[in-house]
Length: 457
Image (cartoon, rainbow, N blue to C red; front, side, top):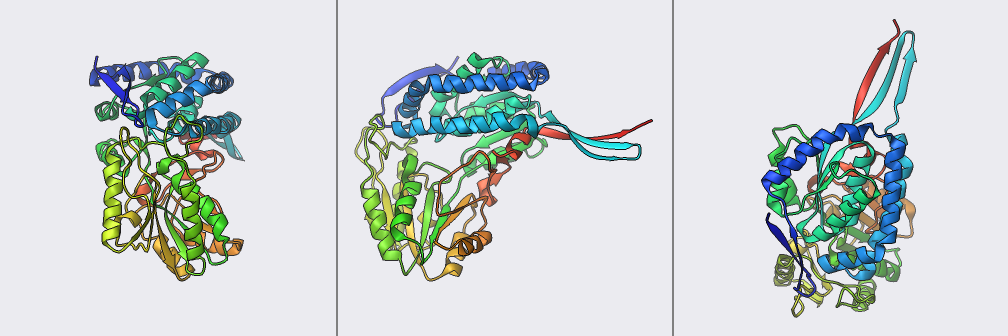
């Protein structure tokens, strides 16, 4: 059996080596899941809900240990690891509250001797290839509603968050999910490819656009339900009437939280010329206050870059921007080793000729561009192949609604950013993906609606 080495990105130290899957073992796990899924679907919803309730309690019980593991393997500051786990709880509560109603039979018509209704059947065996940056959030967004609706789940956590993935599976098994129904597959891209090769009933992926595109191509001829939650180049516009200090403090957090490693992290900021200078001054002051260093220190705000190759990408974006006329206001170069560190980086005088304003950064770097009016801001916000989130800061709600209604994005924000709610669907436009998670629709997505035409004899 092959193994997967897991290193701490903040120090480079080896944390552990864990057993990894092979193509043969993945195929065997699929056969097991296929054989046991019908029995799981027959378990009453009340019992499945009780299991997830126990899973929630186990997360609370082990929260400190789980947070420490997350910090060690992805470099997330410990306070933010705790935030992710605490933030998971209301998501679980939402699924617990809404799952039964989301898949309840719908009686839609009765007339004469004809009755029509809709039932919701589980897809069957669901494959989930998940992400490392928020492994509890994005993993459980798929795993929990899929299990609640009667599916078996083959879950491949990112190789950069394998210990967390194993912990998710372990706690679900302890809560009562059969081991044959929820199976964690550890490994790299070859394990993901082996999983996609199985006769799965649904593929749910969170990650980069490049990987999502390869998955879509591999499934193109098989008519398998596919959901791709991909990247973003998320813009925000600060209008002339906004409070520059409040906007700067909020957006600095939105750009730099989780060391900027979020699909909905703020990556482009457009500021009206009337408040541009005041905004930039406050933004730089706020960023300068963020403590960078040991992710295990509760006071650390900027942790490690999880993937070493990202350091070169970030430096390349800075070089490209400066060469084309941008002003580097702070940061711009990787920190000293060991480990993968990159300081908060702010560029002004940027344009859309620069990669930093067009290509996903996925790190603590942001470009700030001056604009003359709402029309220019909207045009620039839409000048992208992505469409995940977008926001506007203004005192005028009507103006905010007018701007946001013109922006092509799955999620929009007024006077906030980098926020996800379990009550609202999470989706993207363009290269940000297809399908959705969260909301009631994010529960129903793991089912097939079945139409019933019933005539009384």
